[in-house]
Length: 252
Ligand SMILES: NC(=O)C1=CN([C@@H]2O[C@H](COP(=O)(O)OP(=O)(O)OC[C@H]3O[C@@H](n4cnc5c(N)ncnc54)[C@H](O)[C@@H]3O)[C@@H](O)[C@H]2O)C=CC1
Ligand SMILES: O=C(O)[C@@H]1CCC=N1
Image 1 (tube, helix red, strand yellow):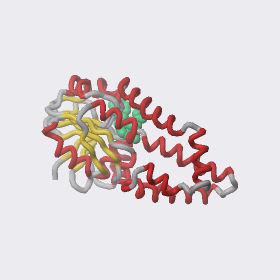
Image 2 (tube, rainbow, N blue to C red):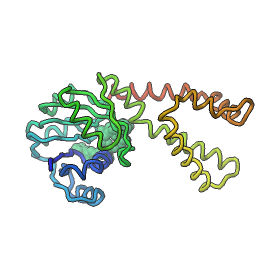
Image 3 (cartoon, rainbow, N blue to C red):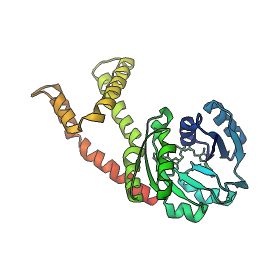
Image 4 (cartoon, rainbow, N blue to C red):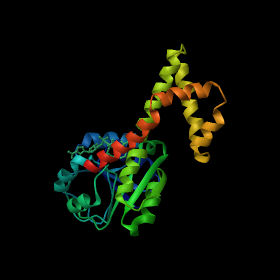
């Protein structure tokens, strides 16, 4: 079994490790042994645990899962030249990663929280010779799409990386709307979750505009509700959300 080395032991590392644990030996590098033990327990398989200071990444296949602000600090603690580094760090350029970590090859990957249920939408860019390996490795946690530039990956960060939080806002507020009209909270949550489960399937095959047309009867309930979303500028707010997230990615 090949070994995959995670640097960082947070949410994203754990989510990706869940997808890889049956096909690879997992090694995790962190700052705190207790947290590494907790990671191992949550993952449910034996892992190699290592502390960051003086850790050698020589010839290793690394998935880099720390926060964007930690790159320089981590670079001072580890040594060696990795075979390849897959970085999931939002907005952290190939140039900055290369300057600090000096790997043989480098890929940026942008997964999302659905990695924890094997349904991440992960975008990829970087060294072309690792394109197939990147698609296979990150394919273990969901769907992948190779993009031709870092700009597109930063835009995809504002769409699918951050997207679960946007949809959570919609989900919570729709359920609040039902509660406001008198539905029990627990029932509203069941109905909202069922809505999202069905919608997740429908949107795979139907263009959003046609899906809307299929729901909206002349003078009916959907037209009335939809009007409120247009009054609230939800369309413009969504476009701005992706714009602001993308801009933020370019600042990290
Ligand atoms: N949470 C999400 O939905 C997504 C997160 N990402 C990216 O994944 C990366 C990790 O995010 P999460 O796992 O959510 O965060 P987290 O806070 O759960 O994990 C961050 C990990 O970084 C390490 N760390 C923290 N401070 C450090 C330091 N000073 N020196 C060395 N290591 C340190 C620790 O191992 C910590 O567990 C971020 O760069 C983020 O941009 C990418 C896509 C989605
Ligand atoms: O908010 C963030 O910076 C990270 C990147 C994508 C999702 N969460």
